[in-house]
Image 1 (cartoon, one colour):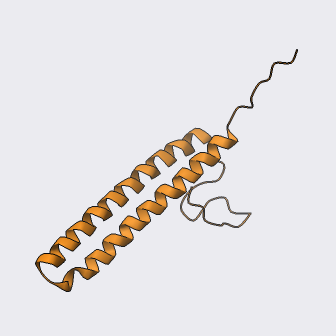
Image 2 (spheres, helix red, strand yellow):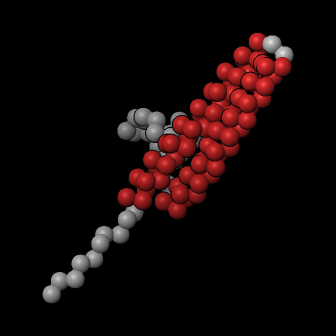
Length: 103
């Protein structure tokens, strides 16, 4: 889910994920994670636009909020990317083998 490296003997990831969780539960967690990623990416983009608008209206004091908004947006985009990779990996592992007709 987070793609952090853990010790082979670890029962739980640093992000809070417990290894060995049922696939259906993991899919639900990934669905929540992708929604959070989109919320962060869109929220960061909106804050970035507000920062540029305030910089144009007020002064150069808006540089710190612009940097913070950029960081929030980048974190959201990375979260979406990691979640999509995890979803593809789960889909590959749980794929039912193709049946062939033998005559």
